[in-house]
Length: 62
Image 1 (cartoon, rainbow, N blue to C red):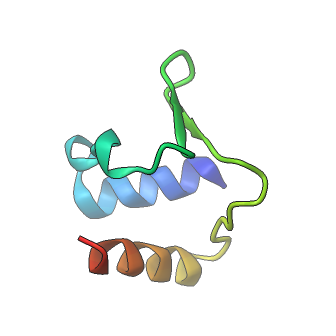
Image 2 (tube, rainbow, N blue to C red; image 1 turned 90 degrees about the horizontal axis):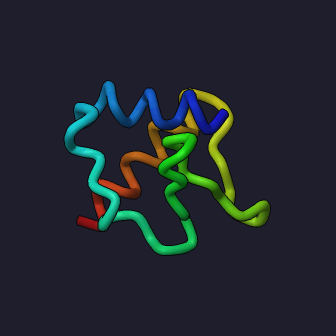
């Protein structure tokens, strides 16, 4: 799921626009795997509809 969320964000914003400073510290970026590790308690959207809602919330916060 993590991979599909990242690829959706890259398609939406362009890969160069995913700025790590916009991501809260609890989303820790692991340079060796180039993935963000998320604590288990963090809600991860499953369906494309939930991903779009997640992205819209993120856009509204800017």
